Amino acid sequence: MSEVIYNRIAMLRVERGISRRELAEALGVHYQTVGYLERGEFSPSLHLALRLSRYFEVPVEVLFSIDPFPRIGASTSDAQRSA
Image (cartoon, rainbow, N blue to C red; front, side, top):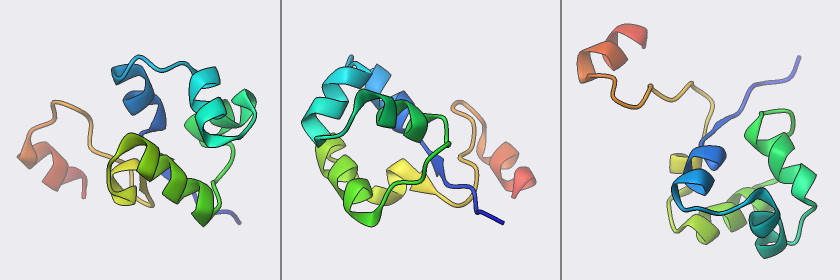
């Protein structure tokens, strides 16, 4: 049984106006790998997760979680109810 790793790669990429291909080139991976990561079909190695963190200039836990991220715009009480 594999564990699900949730991520915010697509959100950060789109927010910053970066294409999958541009992100892939910056990371040295195939552009399809970025799609697999974004859809949760592939879990990154620790090395790739840290490179993504460095690229987006955010802590790795902002990008990845073993728990679903709260919806954007959800109130604090909504997030606490779903926990």
